[in-house]
Image 1 (cartoon, rainbow, N blue to C red):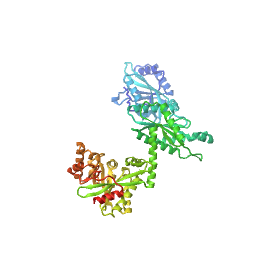
Image 2: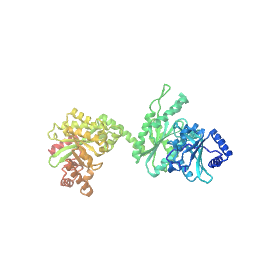
Image 3: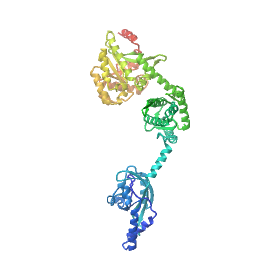
Image 4: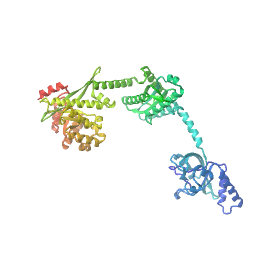
Length: 606
């Protein structure tokens, strides 16, 4: 029995002929040794007719799959003409010689099931020529039985329907895509949005609908002509596609109005707003670059409205209305900008944008200062301090580092900010070296993972030390565990280089991140810092107490100093001493102090 494997491309089999019954009769008669002469003449006539057909005819034996499957026993001239395979190359071979990568497995399974039941079947399949060219066929397959009722052959008759399929694809394209730009149209956008809303129902995550309207496009179109206007719209479509991912959808609803559906922009409102803002700014930037056609240059801006959603309860029309309202707010705000529909999110984005501008100004005007929190040792007393960055923003007051440090990382200012801290710390060490009470102190500064990952980080540190004249052995860099999830080899190489110059290295907030004995063993560390969240509860939470004991024991076994942060009570200090921790930092000893206040504090401690 002939079996088509569903994982292979189908063999080229022919379209139907109205004379299947004649084929059956002739082949059955051919198996009869007493075939009459008139039947032989009929067979010859039939063979001549088949040779003249435009439809492809292919006949195979009924060899079962365990014997290697069927083999071709006859092809007509149309087979050679359509497939490019000479008759001599086809006869005796498996019909799979015409297989290709895009043949539909589901249709192949239908063929196999029909032939297993000795039934006729009709399918539409993709086949391939000798040169590998893809074409479609409308295929009828009929089993041929002998006088005893046994299946002895299969006849396949096919008609080439490639042109028909191309026409269907064109109709489908026109039905779901904008004719001018090739972008999705309203119908396809609605379908994609429906799928997105269904996904939100299964796993809530924020997505975004962005409406983009070109500013003053009608005036430009009237001035330079519709041909130039169409060319500009096509280029706008290309730029919009380049601004989003493959999973996102860019659509044109008509005229100069475009819509972008962005998937999975965040799991919480703040993250979603931030990521949607990034896309919006990217779009405005790309559209704001000059367009050049036939040596003429055009400048274009756009207004953009954003509606975020994470529920299947938001219909498309409502989301488009929200995005439209936000877009008109953007136009009212002066154009060439964007607005969120949700007022709370817009406030959040405006605040972040404003704070980013203030942060840039703060760096230029050196509005930052360092405060210093003392570090003590039970045997040596005051041994150093941690430099803590402070920003007193005009008009807002103190901005917490937990707010402006991540912002600096997001908007590309962390290197400049980190370099400022490094410069200021080195200047402080040089100043302390002139004061007998402070000359022996070390100074720790925090290093952002993104700053540490920069290729020139080690070079920047060494150049700063050389310029200032500060002693490397008085500087300590505090690194976080989050840094270690990146290239551990690169991290260790940089740390080894810094340590070789005498710079101290401390692992901050130990136990809260990606702690691993493997990397602790490999890294060039001097110190572990126990996170204050453990220290605060060592007297009331046995789990935190056990973790703290483990960290102290681990540090001792690796030859590392262990310092506890956030020590606020004498009882906490005594517990830490009892488990072998002898270095401390916290309000029990001193709050973070401005430079002069810290110097006065050290003088009193001396």
